[in-house]
Image (tube, rainbow, N blue to C red; front, side):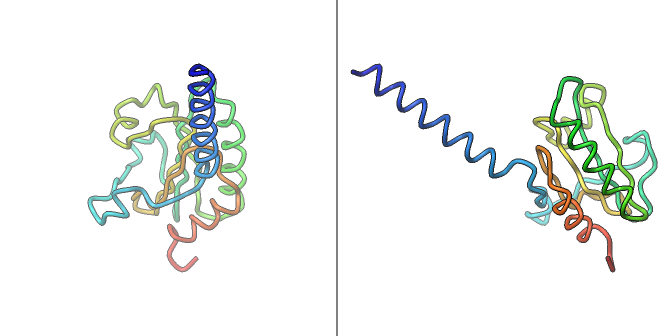
Length: 144
């Protein structure tokens, strides 16, 4: 009987974890440093290996065997193509370990929305919805 209770508890905990992760997956929110009003992370073209967008940049951290990364690449590429002055930069997390550690990238895909100066305005883990990315760009682009 004790084994059944342990199995039920583990199943309940795993279900709760899955539901919480699904709810948070792909949601673009202010990074913790932005919320706390502390130092905001800033990225420059040298770190990204590409120029920043004139108005904003969508940075995606991916890995080789990440299935959601392909869907995220499509979403971010579509948005960058729709909004003038926005560029999409995809970085391999394994090739940019120093940046991954500094930005606290825990899983892929992780998306960062940068303003024109390279400051991180929003971030998400998981595949975001196109409408959410467009809304996040509204915070990154003044007078959008």
